[in-house]
Image (cartoon, rainbow, N blue to C red; front, side, top):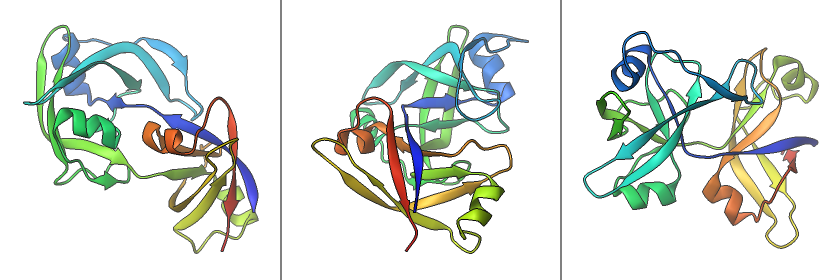
Length: 191
């Protein structure tokens, strides 16, 4: 067992270079609002509108830098509001996922797929994976103690990269279910 920072990942969009230009104009570059915990990742000042036939959500933050493929990460509550049924997936696993329309100040992008509910996951570097004997594991459980709604999250996927800062990432629905308010630590359970 070891402790890890719990981070709440609100709805956001990762854009491809092509879609960034379509939404914001030729040659457009994202402007950093603030750095995120993972090295090189940042919340951009720019936002877009997520739109479906049923509804829309304005002011959805873009996370930079740009990626090869556009990916939209929302919660189940957001999906219900939008009237879509995105799968729970690991980042980058977009084949056959839900679609939506992204609206920016200079244009629109219709995504046939790319909308997911992100699978809860741990960001770990190889040193920690080795230290805690997780080399042959894909999943762990994380116990989060709060004042009124403590929960243990099972099937937490391990994402491993030398650049990662250790953290446990969950969406807003999961954070609300556990009653998380402010900075919180979880305990990684190795069964």
